Length: 222
Ligand code: TYD
Image (cartoon, rainbow, N blue to C red; front, side, top):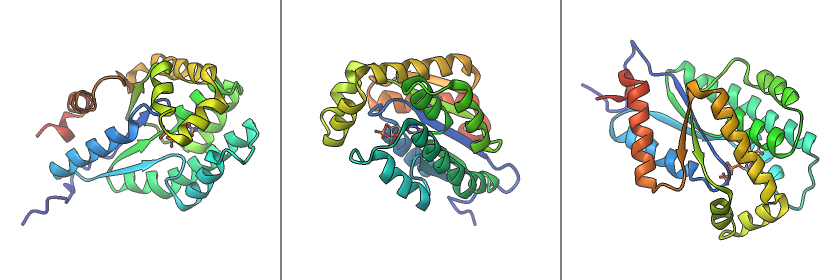
């Protein structure tokens, strides 16, 4: 008897695939599509996110995204890192040890892009603290959905929470975050796949899946 969701005991996939990009770049849509596609192929995956992938993370997320609570940039950095430590220990590491494919909506590059490039905190400080928070974990592939800021503005300002966020942080902040992501992708070209987030969701889904087949044929080519 074969179970469609059982993992082969000999060679478990064990992959950490991270989706990054500015707010509104379509990460969650692509994670949901990929997870459903893998599901239909009988490949088990675990979609998760930062901030908010654990019970502690949910509380931190509420604080971080509440416009009425002032959080100093350094304090924000520590809250995102606290979320990451908990997420790595409670969700990512155990899932990877079981041989699962983890699809994470954001990871350490988000802190480099937002807190270092966007908010102007020291890159060295962010790199050092990220390293501590990760405890040795690193993505097997990072999919960067690159969205030009005018398109980000159009997408965010059509949602209430997004509009407040865009207005509070400002266009220049998001320009720096986007440039930061592209710089990280250049430095870590080996593990990063950059896509134009203005492509249609169907096209993005198919490009992402082809890249997975190319990089990890033993897991994704059927
Ligand atoms: P997210 O919920 O992924 O936003 P969206 O779904 O709109 O893309 O992330 C929440 C916000 O937190 C987002 O503006 C990015 C920010 N963030 C940081 O500033 N630093 C970090 O380390 C992380 C993980 C997120």
